[in-house]
Length: 510
Image (cartoon, rainbow, N blue to C red; front, top):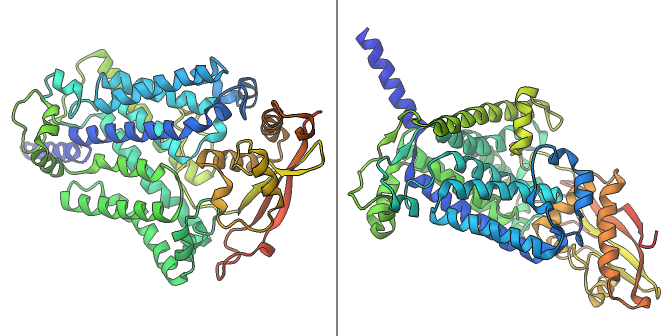
């Protein structure tokens, strides 16, 4: 009997070690997410009026009409006002919450506000969403539930931080979330012929909207891309699973290999902030011994983790049960979220994009926007660029996409209309990742007239604002110049490989 209890105690200790996160790892994740969130806001600022006001690509009325399903479950503060100043005020509130999160001041309240603002931003204009947005709000969700301000924070300086690690349900949920991002990036690829044949990376680098110059060079070496395709699957499925082993050396190697993969992705493919967020999420698996080294090397920085008492060589594990109703509720939410993540990711993998989870948990995915998909580069269709040839009242021809999405200057639009052929860098046809996301969704739903109608009204309204009669825009077309991904891997594509597909015709005065 005593032996049975002993084995049980050992099992509990092992589980506590596996599902434990060092408080300093939580602190680094908190700071990294805050910095990346602030960077994301800064990158959105140039298009603030174009994407989030009633002058932009999606008015509040259209957002409520076309994306009513989002608004049944999630409140968007960004719908309160349609002016530029109202959005500046909301962006300022968002930035203040992220700054508080970065400093670890009122950490839980700051993470709640930051999470709500990210949800609000997403619901205001769902056209702009991409994988990085999904991961950012997912990490912020878990930061609300874990003691992210326990170390290296203003909160820790003001309080008594006695525990240095966390092994609660919420911390286990954060570990599960990060691991699912890594593992589910590879699992959908197993069922595709492209990745089974070792062509996955070559196809990914053949997507012109996102491939960087170095990516084109790598794409031209078939043996290299084939080997790297197989290696990618090994990292995503095999190396990811090694993170669950509570052996510091193995975790160090697994994290290093994953960071190398993310660095390679960043160097060859432009996926905006997603690799940075993924790398940040992995710090929760960093062994305590690494943080011990950091504290020895940076004592003044690490001193903010407690009240000045000497630090323990290894972190104590916070395995104590919740002591308040609020803490019990927090762990209950975390447990439910873990169940949802498992159900959703398995269901999505087995059934595809049409999957709908059981009603008992489906509401949570909609309300918290936890419906997530990590199977990047597992599905390849067509690649190319958009043009929007238009006609002015004086008969001149313009290309309304000369600025990569926003309304261009007259001189640029005229010059672009005269340019024929494949752009030297197709990525330059899109101003940034959010404009690219917008056009990808518009093309995906090109069979639904309303989506292009919103963008068409925006182009007409903004172009004709204050222009004299001869320069007024009469109408335009939206054309996708595209080709199949992977059709010509043995050579660089030429203009003859592309075909023009008319997606939309717009009359500015109808």
